[in-house]
Image 1 (cartoon, rainbow, N blue to C red):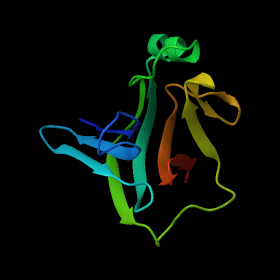
Image 2 (cartoon, helix red, strand yellow):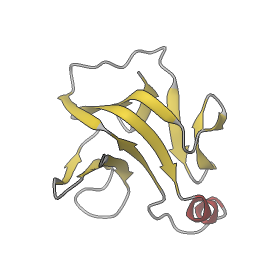
Image 3 (cartoon, rainbow, N blue to C red):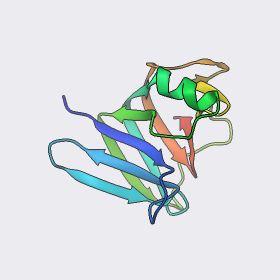
Amino acid sequence: MKTIKVRFNLGAGKNFKKWKIERPNGGGISYHSPDEVQLIMSGCLLKNQQTTALKIFEGANKTVCSWILCESIEIVANGVSTQHPDSEMVSYNPRVSPNWIYRGSIADGMRFNKLVSSGNKVYLK
């Protein structure tokens, strides 16, 4: 099954700091402001290019090195938040750690039934 690729875009330009969603089989690419939408992702897998992430961690310029693969995605206009304050965050910042982090541990390659965005953060649903 082809999967949807989701990442937070930090490349300069009009889509800077927006969620980038790439759909398979020519389904297109879309960008969404984290202030305007919430992403509800199902059947998720955390991907990380360890070598690239380690270079960034050691001071190299940032480049694309991580994303979330998901089987389906729902894009909801903000105001209908499914995020709860007690939800657990899944985080990624290669300047802090060259890995996805969940519950204080490396989470590269972990699968989750459902993840949701809140702003530019991602939480377990």
